Length: 281
Length: 160
Image 1 (cartoon, helix red, strand yellow):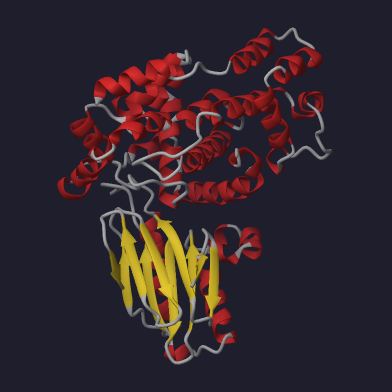
Image 2: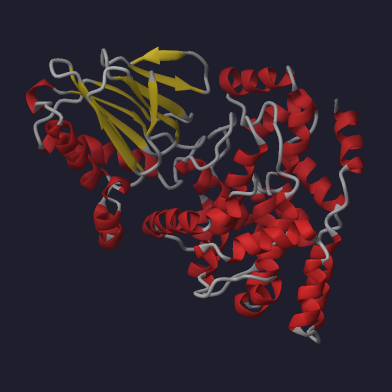
């Protein structure tokens, strides 16, 4: 099964080139709104989703967005990157998903919630946003997309180990399947040529404590965002709460219980506003 | 049979005997289930956090988010349908945590404590309880007979 999973990763369609082009254009700095709009318009699927997202309350643009040119003008650089990445990633989250959750859309909802939470926390801690973190949180469970295709009956065995042997879900996956969904996710991100920071955050999203390098905030915040969403029951799957709690995360960021509770309240607001990001069908 | 879904930070009350109220995948949140067997009126609240003092504005917008503002609302809605406090059966489920979370956020635990305190203060007895531990729960209530079931990832649905 491990072989099959690894071979499948190689066959996953390439990451949408439009997303890369937009990122390159923006990071090069020297571009016009018209240029940016042209790149996005060439990809009809992404363009359609950008239009839908731009009009969701999440981005808080007052006037109706009728064209990609409107979106580029009113959303601003940071939000355009976020919208393009969200649209690019969402196309992989369709169809049924055996084992983990009934449909990939549910996994998508959980992913968007974690991505929004990552920004709420980052904003609370550092008073700004971080789109690498956003992307890492959005992709943290991408490994489940491929795993779900193959686990089949083994999934029962994985759950068996969780329920009767006190294993975490991750440990159970390793024992039964030979690899966990976080590592599969890292390999998918590698296949898509994502930068090291994002690959690392996906690979260690349940165990950031295993990362040797000091002062890595992104993996810890992806971990925390995911755990808070799982705790509050947003888009949870069969694995549910079967993950090990890492208490040090609270001290690491000097968080109080109240901060976590406030973040949960804010997330419910944002999820309401972000329907355009969640509803991808 | 109509299945009525109770969302996160939401409540539903019903006197229609063909209704089944259901809430999915409770984690640290808690479902408060009430039923008056005489009036055949039941209700379910799915709250997220213990105290409305966290955010007064939010609590006004959506009282069901918090235990202390959601529970009175649930009871009032049931009274309006003919339920009476002295006949009401009260059950709670949820308040789970993640594995070995000794120092983790304890929101589940705080929620359990908050519910117990509210009921104790109001002289309401909690008849049945399935709380804590570390798995998700799906809870349903049949309005016809007050049957309340809790299903966890651990397997079979069982009656509470």
